[in-house]
Length: 322
Length: 310
Image 1 (cartoon, rainbow over the protein chains, first blue to last red):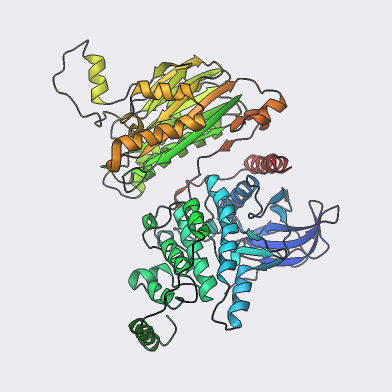
Image 2: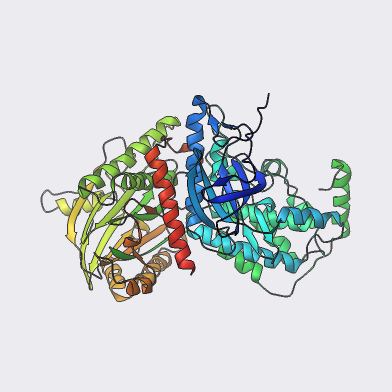
């Protein structure tokens, strides 16, 4: 039933003056390669090659797009341009930078800085498997998000929204810099099936307004995702997704598990960002930055006996950690 | 052309901010616009956003890089926004159409042109004098104008408009220009949240006294203070016209917030007005020329950004 994914370009292929070394990743929108420019500098090259719309046999260069899929393919291309246009305007260490953009093989390519390191997602998985009481240290979380928020502030200043902030889209380089990746407006459009467009989102990190057709998106939508990332850095797992929370909100309960491990202030910040009502969240990145940077004495509040009991009951009832 | 611009929008005491603002420019022309979505009708913030998007996309389509007929352009681009609103309501089967005011100013060469519909205003200040101001399409302002001609009895609420985008009848669009600009001339676009609380004289005085980066936020803060906890959305966009020609490189780079449009190539367009997000954007086919143009734009942006980095 599922058709084969289009084949990546073979190693050694030269596109737009860049020599492909290997495939780094593939997603719904296309393929990211590690490549070398003419000065032998490493770069990442992103090829527009939506797997649901384009076909390419191994060893071939040109993707084939069936005529009935052409309109969607072109629509996705527009979003790919949008991502390029967005990134091209921003020069900030916390936002991946675009170096070049060109057309070849009947498709388009975006050349970006090649970053060495791992995604925040990888770090969370590694850290939580150590099964310590803390996933990351509080100071690590604060400084990590301070960097991410600096980048996000620039993004918002350019009247753009990221709309898919999650640990897998935050890259931590080997020299300890956090960089936001994947400004793929492309996905939003490529999920179009039949007559309606289903917005793409990552459960757990997507704010409730992302699920609604008429939802008004704004900086607060990205801020919800930041809250969810902070949550994941403390808990080791993503929070419940927004529809689940709208039905029965267990957020406060699962955050109470972190009391006395992380400071009350950090827990409150995560909860504030993740308010279901967009207006109750910090309305700008700046407001959030100020709160995160506030260096007051950290207060820790232990769980009371009844709160512990409630947590245990919840664990029994659901058979899992809240 | 060189100009500097400062814009700010505040929600005030309302639940939502239904005001929108933004600007876009090519090498030879700049378009500045502000819209105030109307309460009492559905989705005011959608209305104001759609009106601006219609302006920006008309501008992008026609300013290559100059507009042949600025006044005709303004009129048609405003009406295009009106049609977008009607289409939006029809597509969704809304009982009522979202409505908005709009005011737009176009700078091209050393001339300014503007158009408005509703009660969002444009002020033009030269030195410390208020040189021009749009007349609202409200019954009060109409009354003031007509009272010399025909006697009218009732006093109307200033908020009642006789035209706006999205209303059943064809909107009334007033256009003005060309007005020759002098270096240092300032244009302010604002929503009624601002002029409802700050007098014309105070607006002109604030604009003439200090830089836009100081005067625009100060005016907005003042309006919010005067209106208190019930304040309407307050939005203002100020533009200072600096010169029709590009300056020497050194001077241009020093102008703090100044924009020099000569940085742009022939066919490039820069905008702060966010294109429609996802679902409801009308799908236009990308043709070959459009693809080439997009790639060129992106590479120009990359160059601009990386030269800033150095």
